[in-house]
Image (cartoon, rainbow, N blue to C red; front, side, top):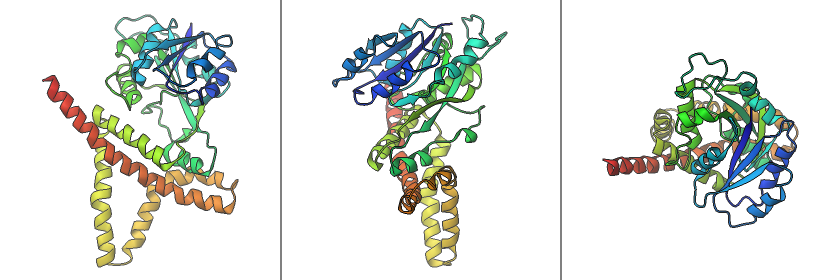
Length: 334
């Protein structure tokens, strides 16, 4: 079976070489690489031309396209029955593609125009994994705070990032592709449609790509604001967002008031609750601390709760903006 690898770029001239070099070095090369360019104004296209003799590379020009539109354009142009998807900001491990597409190539599904699973012998979609590739202490704390480890993943409910995922082109067509009306959280909506139609993704935790987390609180806050705005637009995870509002706007103020007026011992309860809230980031980063100097260890431990709170506040700011957008869109469609 032919494997088409697709990704989207926009002004990635400074970072695109890392992923392209890692694709050149793959143990299983893709049969074609289709890159959708959203109208880059830097040297991205010049860098891509440098790799035309090293990869079966084709650039799809889609000026002004969002990520969903770019991915769909590249997939429509793909010749392969299997589509692998990654991102411009990553570095793929040498055996990433081989491991990612193995479940699809070794156990092929028969042709189907409806997408029904009756008689299917193999999976329709595979979830790879991604890991933090920090360059400094801040990025180490960031990765530990926001990224799960493979051992934390429940394969039956896992919704993979499109940094590391593969699926049959036929399945992409059946579910209608990536949602082009959505600018963020688009891969979550796509994953949910795929899972609803075909069941859980096959999880391959050793099909790994690496990427650098956001390098500043400002960049991180902007990222999580956009993610939450996308959740609001797509009506994703309303209970989770409601719980966050309740925690910060109701439970935390009431707890502080009680600690000030009822009993000082309640501060201890609050401290324990705070530690419970950041227990997963602390567990992830703890084994890595021994490689750091004492001052850097303290920086990481202090940054983890700060990053957690900044991300939550950014999400609380972005989610209602997405809801308003969705309500206006719904009213216009009536």
